[in-house]
Image (tube, rainbow, N blue to C red; front, top):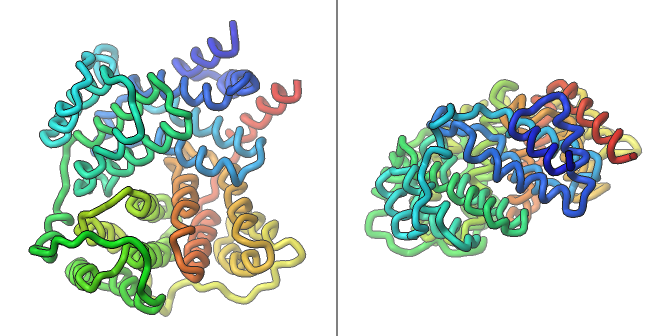
Length: 437
């Protein structure tokens, strides 16, 4: 049996040979790309997506995060993390025979029918029409974003699904069949019920008559960002909406709003209990989508995002963990990795500042990514990979202090959510046996 056929067989029914089949598949030319393409093509139609609504299993979404972290990982760590993520995807519950997306007929690829499906909540129509469309482009993913953006069902997964499916499409070099699968899956998610536009409607009422889109850029001082972040962090929903509406009308740019919201989200992450780490990291994933979106012209989306951050619990500011001066030793990034892998959150957050000062952003991100590669993403719904990948995307748009606060909170979160690496060791053994042969 060829490596490609063995890999496809493991995707259909994972066995103890899954990692070995993956290893043999990736040693071929373009093997990594093709292994992921084949997983997407085979698994998207077979997963029981409807059975998870209004939630979303992160086996597929986490693939974007792993590929986004690839530049920060050495080959061995990347292959390990990708193998684990693909196994998590392959083990996601399947639809029963005759049900799910495989049972939906193929449509004609008529784009207005796809838009209609999202407006009228007909997910099967969205999927079916897109399976008949040729060719797919990244613009198709972007065109559906305004229809999904105001819907915060399952805390904003719909817009994130569209955005990250488009990213995956690009990272995998625009696969033909896989592109239709990715766009169809994201559109199916966006069209599914329930719909939740409560936050968007409440924010829109405060902006009634205000037509100006949120401008690009950052024009406000860091202390202004901090003042808005403090409202979002510590006050209620009404005060949060009022504060965001006020700064939107004052002409704040997208960079200003993003800086304030990320700072508040970082504080929430810093305060999160161990059992809430992955969930509290989710607002960063939503904010990274909002910050990267080509738009958005709708200012109510920023109030909606602030409401999401405000939703999560936080400590009083005087009780919050704060970095303390600490000697990092001769290898600051090595000490940071050790603290995270040893599950020492307070030590980890203390080591971020000296590591940034002596070794720089790139080295710190490499160190954090290396710790993520030691965790099994199937155990926490890919929370670690998604949180760090979102932070990587947010950092270029933040002021320097915002970058530091974000990484401090991420380091603490990673240290507080360490799990067994037993499955990763199985992947390591299979990869080492094949890649050295």
